[in-house]
Length: 493
Image 1 (tube, rainbow, N blue to C red):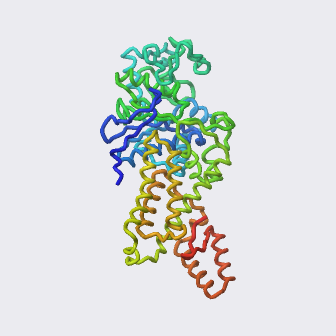
Image 2 (image 1 turned 60 degrees about the horizontal axis):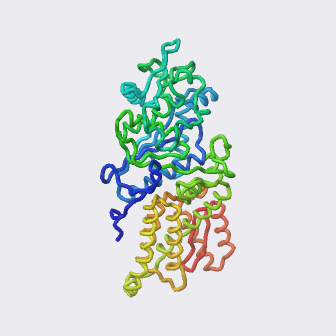
Image 3 (image 1 turned 90 degrees about the vertical axis):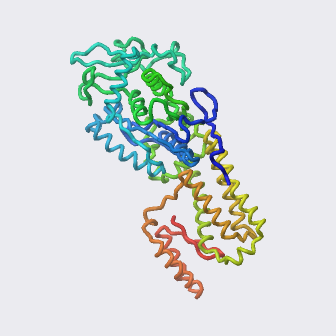
């Protein structure tokens, strides 16, 4: 029996640049914040990697017995939201509502468990204002001069935080600011590295009332406010794509720690980029690589498998051939599950036969199978190594096949049940769920079994024409038949 509580998890902490033994802030509980989507459009496969990776890490932590408070925000106000709303001739709020619905559709398709909380930036303006007021009071932030309408920007003073740059290891004196500086506000900043906490209202933009006049929050402050409200001043994990390390996460650290006086995050996790022909994927690379477009052609599960088949921190290449390979791998996994279900359903072994099984041989078989569970857990305890864990899963499938359908296998019902239980456990952990075609899913199981029985009867009476007609009719409805020594089994295409 595996004692999960005795297993120790090691994670690569981006802020210390080394693998560390994980210990939660509060025993048995984990506070986890993941940067969610800016809901101005469909998200692409690069975004999907972030969402799937940290969904899996959450699943594993819960599998290991932790209670996880998982917060993933929706950024529903920023420059991109405003620009897209203008382009689509709609409001920022309406654009957000539409794309949050679309996000949830893609997220559910990818097998992502909804967060404990999905906060929206626009619903936390008061919390954002409170943090900004605290930063001004502590001399870490300052308002700019008022414009003609009496509104001001508010900036964080990066020079006031001596540890600025500790996450990305950037030397701020050598930074080339380039497009990180807004040409419209650079004159009112005290330093080019200072960043906006609050932006004065511009014509045609959404705005809220604040001590600095009408305006809206900057991007970075939103996450600090929502993390603080739902998880507290100090959290266990903060996660996101590697592209967010600077300046977004760097700025989150600065404003959060200056406001609270406490450590903001204990472990920083960042997933690697998805590359196309060696270049980082982004929304500007092409609409054909949105999660929605790929899913409509190949389904969602191949995307999830593709993401989890490599270690989360390494960059990976994306192509349609890779997605096809992922689909083939999933087909092998799901076919194995169907085979085990079929063998269990059609097992003719009586209790007397099972009693005659050599107890020592039976125990050896069970131990070999159960050992794969420990191997899989050990792989995932090593910085969530999903690539190794999936390899273990395929080793388990190969071993189980030899013990169930190999020559002289003669599996007992107990062995089949153990294999089935472990298979289900692995699939649930990875979030691998079969996707059914819309046609095949409409055909009831009772109807299929009835047709299989008619076909079996036709074959026994040597009416092969009728048997073939039934097979072909089912195939047109997305149902595949396979004749085996134990009888005919079926699966949805």
